[in-house]
Every structure is written in structure tokens, then in C-alpha cells.
Image (cartoon, rainbow, N blue to C red; front, side, top):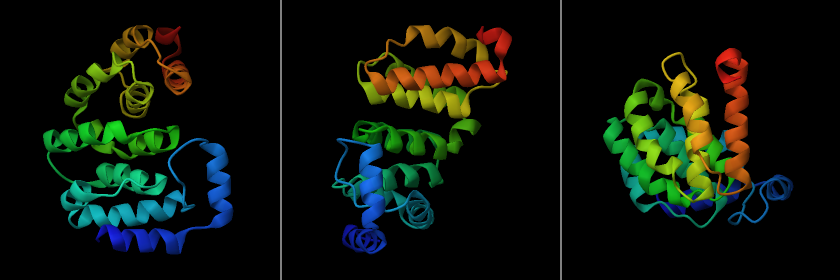
Length: 188
């Protein structure tokens, strides 16, 4: 699909009431059209099965939904992990809200097959002074790394992250709480 076709599709799927609702949840984010995430997921899966590389190379970034769509396509794309991580590296600077961040991280399930490589990829972002780079780390690790193999590293990492803002701080707290639920003694 071309950017023009995607734009037409987004406008056709937009719901004004949902746009208002979403704008209230994510104040100050990019322009929001009002397309529900399940509809974006359906389109992302379609793009991921087609020319996802071509899409990501030329994707528009004019709206919240267009950026969300890129994150979802990355999550569904099939490819070598090194190639996908290069696309992730290009995508992370586009993240400016918790919703895009969290949906992208949850959808990037290939991380579970390549935990060591993804862990190493994420560690420079853990030391970043950028709020959403830190949130990517916290949410990605929470979603895919709270395992027997990684719990000790996670417990050691959380105090090392110096949250650069509210959304990074809340993500680290959220991740610690999930560690506590799954590994209460180690986390305590």
C-alpha cells in the first residue's frame, strides 16, 4: 500500500468520538485521527505480509496512527533479527507517547527468540537521557524478559536506570511490579 492509500484508509476508519477519547489519554501527542488499535493491527499484519521493508522506508509520520502502524508492522514483520533491529533503531526516535511505545514493545515478540541479542541492543538505551528510549527498554524487558534466565539481570538493571521523565519512571515501576508478581522473593 502507498502512503496515499494508507491515508485514505485511515480517514475512512476514523471515529470522531474515539479521536476525542484517545486525545484525552495521550495529551500533546502527534495529531490523532481516531482509528482503533485492532483496526491498525489488521492493516499492520497485511503490510507485514507484503512489502514491509518498502513500507517502513517510505512511511509517513504525520499522525499518531501512522507512527503506531510502523511500530505494529515492525512487530509483525518476518526477517532476520539483525535487520529488524536496524529498523527498530530507526523507529525508536519516532516514539513520543506511551501508547505507541507499549503497543510496539508488546507486538515485537521476536525478541523472545533472540533475547541475548535484543538485550544487548537495548542496553545503550537504558543509559539514555531520553524518556521514551528508557521506556522502550523498561517495557520491552517487562514484556519479553521476565524469565528464569534474565530475572537476576533485570533486578540488577532497574536501579541503574535513572528515569528521564514521568513515562520512563512509570514504566520502570510497572516492570518492577511485574517482576515482583512473578519472582517475589528475588525482587524483594
